[in-house]
Amino acid sequence: MPRNVVRLLLACILFQQTNLYSFEEISCLMPLLRRGPEAFLFRDYTLTGFDEMFASPGEPHSHYAPLFDRLQGWGLSDLERRRQVADVMMRQQGITFTVYGREQGVERIMPFDPVPRLLAAEEWDRLERGLKQRVRALNLFLQDIYHDRLILKDRVVPAELVLGASGYRREFVGTDVPRGIYIHVCGIDLIRDPQGEYLVLEDNGRTPSGVSYVLKNRQVMKQVFPFLFRQYNVRPVDDYPANLLAVLRHIAPAGCDDPTVAVLTPGLYNSAYFEHSFLARQMGVELVEGRDLVLDNGQIFMRTTRGIQRIDVLYRRVDDDFLDPLTFRRDSHLGVAGLMGAYRAGNIGLANAIGTGVADDKGIYPFVPDIIKYYLNEDAILANVETFRPLVPAHRRHILANLDKLVVKAVDGSGGYGMLIGPASTSTQRDEFARKVEANPRAYIAQPTITLSQHPTFVGDHLEGRHVDLRPYVLYGDDIRVLPGGLTRVALPRGSLVVNSSQGGGVKDTWVLRPGPARPEENGETAEV
Image (cartoon, rainbow, N blue to C red):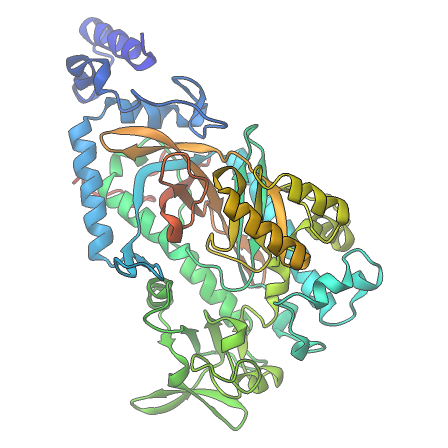
């Protein structure tokens, strides 16, 4: 007999004899008895690889047990109604992303799944320490390769990999950056292997996106599913904009006590424009495009209806290549002519710094544990995924012989594009990638196909397991802070391992739990819909 039905029968007996259970607690479970086993949300649920909720069939991990019981006891029609309300809220609030090259339109509502992912306090503690360690080491690496290059001289990382990386900016060798910090905002993608071990999949140190969905997911959950918060003490996430603003103010030019901060966006048609405008509003700063800015006397100013106003710090969501047509791409209309001159002179702070792309180059990724050991004299807390480098002849032979089993990635690719997933590929695709790897081995890496952990996700009128990853966000200012949780991305098509929204993925709210009783008032619990 299912575990929750046993509990229900015992609860009914106790209620009749001792009134230990409230009428509300019993009545919310009654649909399970009325409808029978076919009504269970988990009726078709199967375990594949590591499951975030279940330790074994029908038995949730201890920190998931209250959520599991509550979901089982809630009426399906009510849950479905709330899920539809959440979708409407996402649509009305314009929580969108943009997909390029699709006939059916470019702007999409972000698919949102209402079953939250839970991270126990002790689990999060290890992740947080590992993330801070990684970001600290990557910053030291960037400071070194743009100045003394000791790690290259000591041959810990091959110099040709660094100097040949597309994200390496020779124009800024020897340039000092504010406070010596290069990566102010970092999104590090984590996965769990079939044994439940967390692995770093990639580092995003240029212009990582997605944090706006973390904040909006929580807002929607508070309003539409407040009852799910009642049994948990969930760490809040709504201080992220204030912490981001503090980081930006921290890198203002010397002597600037009250800096003016702005968010630089490529414009309305960028895939992350919703996030750019959302963060600017939340921080209470201006959202600007390159055409709104002008260089005057070595400083950057913003055009306003009251004249020009100096900008001291830019949170730039524009890639290096497009920031300044005088330094990088001459055909760019997204940046500001002369911005790099003002930056070199110390007249403006930029987050993230120029040239951080080399740190998230996938060709550098296999060396990050060595980078951590070199600068911090510590072993990496979070391990990498096993990675094969085609530049190494033995690795290249292994890759070419096993393309049907490996995931092959372009070292400067993103968004799920430019990659081959071997088990899901055709012979034509494998032949094409074999030619690419042989022609330009520096441009690719390969990794085993790992079955990502799965999490219960709404599919129709029930829950099925779907593969997930996790992107925590790390801020580096006067200290290193990690947003509790991050963005859980979901591969919505059955069996898919690609979680990117541009490839059909969705998102979940991520709860970092802490000891102690639930705090509904802190979670912002509202009246039920």
